[in-house]
Image (tube, rainbow, N blue to C red; front, top):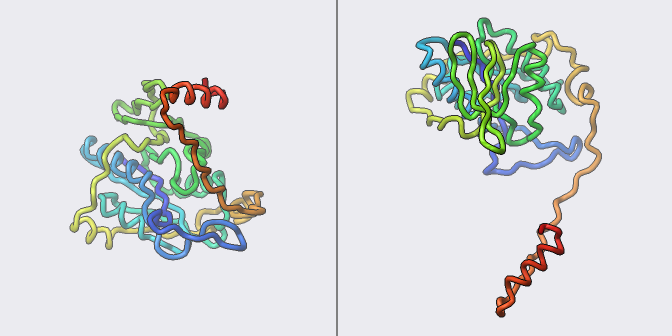
Length: 260
């Protein structure tokens, strides 16, 4: 069982970064960490490989300046190897451009039975990359998986919905996006951390993948951030003194908002 997991390396949310005054995008210089959303996919992949009795987990990531901090965390969890795409031409890449790059990198992994992703990244929240990736790879896809099982050449998924979950299945290979509750990610052990230092990370550029730089980055996305503004400060709420008519006041307030 060979599983590819798409992982994103992001600025640490505990240390909010700053915006580039020229591009008006988040600065990504320095250390990047493994997106917590992707840790669930890594753990799910490791468990599926263990249950199959053999195979390996390959990570695929896209990050500036050859940063590998987040990848090393996922390798310390137990992944066998990684592919990192890093190229100056990727700056400003949109969701579709990201999917193009990841798809090209995944195609270099021989014998991949399953591709796992998060539902969305913690610093982007587009939620579109998994389906774009599946289309570019020509593979069936299931989204929002809260449980994943493999058997008889197919993947069976409990797909999270607002009302509960749907039972879905499709043939392998396939692309599956997993929710945060699918498994409990393990903490890397000291042995795993030391082993991660020697695990292979194949660093690639756009040229290595045969991707035209004009199809990604700012040029490929065809977009421009014109201006940014600080969010408005939250207004103080209305306080109701309960003088015996508190319930009526709340009902009237909600009616005015057309909530009821």
